[in-house]
Amino acid sequence: MKFLLSLIIAFLTFSNQCLSQSSNSASSSSSSSCPEHYSGENCEILNHYSNYYYAAPPEPDTIEFIGLFGDTHNNLEITIGGHNCVIRNVNYYRVSCFLDYSLNLYQLYDVEITQNNITWFQEDFYGPLIEDCGNGQFYMGACQCYLGWTGQNCNIEALPFVTTVTPVSVDGGVFTLTGWFGSDQTEYSFEIGLNKVKIHLTQSDKIIGYVTQGPNGFAGNQDIKIYNSNNVLVYTGVNQFLYDPNLCFNNCFNMGTCNNGVCECFHPWIGDFCSHTIDSNLCQCSN
Image (cartoon, rainbow, N blue to C red):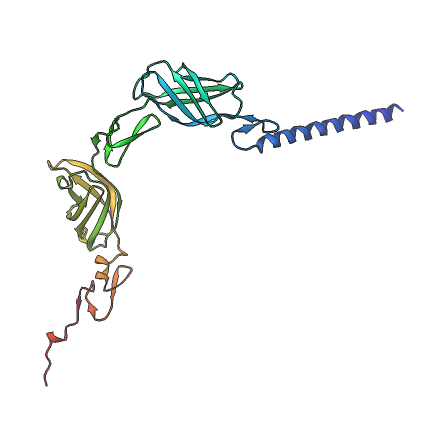
């Protein structure tokens, strides 16, 4: 009888353990399958956040945060750089508050938003509105400069730089550089390897030029160098230019096809680069 009772107790204990493990597993599975920014056994908890804001000048003013804040806002509080921001309005996607404190321009501040006993915190999130971004526009605490400009207010013209380069054959040829080359491109001169570049077209973001062959028909990479009008080196693109052995000079002048660096000319074009035609008038044969 004691033996039978022991078996029953052991069975009940094992069953309870299995049920407990199954319950925990289901709860964990339920929480992990919740939509983004939601948690809880039934995905009922909203983890609010902000991913954007409409900034105000550094003086006391109203600031609006954009994000996901839900329908319930118990004990809603916002601090910016440790200073309380008094709530003005709140809805599902927006919350505005008045900060009665002057902030420093060009400085980023931590933001903490608490509601429903849940706190969202982001370091260096908020920056006051910069009203003069010159050659750029304000976004999230800083001036985002247009191509070719730099500085806190985007009022300093950037030095030239190259972002992309079209390669040429080992015999040289026409190439295109893209990047930034200033508002006055005539101020700059260009070198590829040891070769001076002949410029055909200049724009603030594009240069088209011609370069002769590399040293001794060199195939491979060469540096790009840009000098200002005082012959001061202002940019070096290490190994940024390519003399490609699989390309043909000026693409065979479009009078043939390029086969691994060798031009195969269309009739009646001839020459290493398909640059001239057979002229029967050059030879007057007679008996």
